[in-house]
Image (cartoon, rainbow, N blue to C red):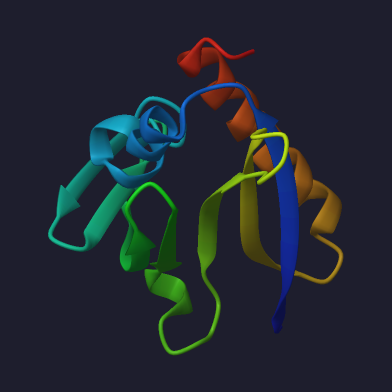
Length: 128
């Protein structure tokens, strides 16, 4: 079944430099995204609950701007997940924008998944 693109926006109350470290490093990602994350070059290995590691490749990034990963199961497709730091030009409010792909009918579950992850991130950042 083909996946389609979904977008989420989460207001964040922290510095972009600190937030980026939580998005782009194995150490930062293991604080909120997965139980354990290891990094080998552009390949990141995520594991949850002691289960087998799932590989995602860092396919694009901009320091202090965004990271884009592609899961191994999505290789050969245009599917990815991206976390982008956006700072409003006028208010200087910071938000974390998520772009992901999910199957039809999984939109609500996918949104809840990201909401829970971002709440964990906010707690780790002291921005909850």
